[in-house]
Image 1 (cartoon, rainbow, N blue to C red):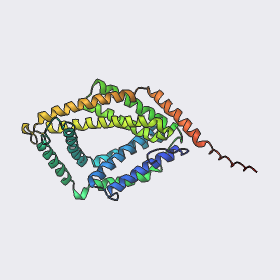
Image 2: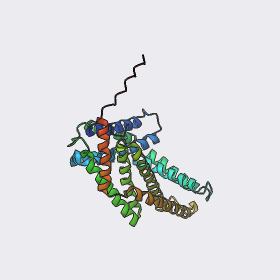
Image 3: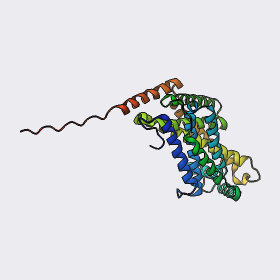
Image 4: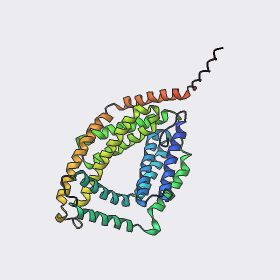
Length: 318
């Protein structure tokens, strides 16, 4: 139950536990103790930072503006330290996913030259990292400092009220971002909606124990929606990369064909995202929060109930 609150656990203690667990897992990855490749370590640790920022947004009202701004900026900046190499890697992965998706319509090596250029860019990005100012080393140092501050986060409440405002704000912002993205599906608007969907996904995971079965489907749908929007964003970034660097790419690389495929796939992803978004954001923010609050109250009542006594064994017939 690493990224979930526990029954009868004060909210402040649970939130701090969740954040500390994510920090420790990121440190394990970045220091090499997890035994994974450097690429995977960066990818996994950056996911941890996003999860931490979602937690901070959930309790932003309760921990106060100063603490929220400081910690949100801290974990944002740590993630940015590691972004360049990861972004170069994602462009390769995005091209591979795109060609796999359209494998029946295109030749396996249709964009081989593009991939070679992307691989060269990835290697160049890796080699450009100065040894004396390694971003991973800086990220580790910042994480260790941030870890020491967590126990001092000042909570005003220790119950549902610690979560209510943040949950309402994030759902409301997600609903608005969905509306804006539907009216103007620019890459920027779709990406903003994606960020709010990921917040909702993480918040639902934290609160899943209030009614595990009921929450599971909504969590899964939020996860799938976040993935669709993530793929859409990655394709938009790849498209911009290959169309704005004429010295690296030209017509011989079949860029026009690649751009058309990207556009086709993005249209598919956005149609699927719209349908999932209509389900996830069908409620008004107040109704959504009130529903989760009702689950919370029943969950707390269940946790406080004494364990049922076992029936005494029946006396044997004489």
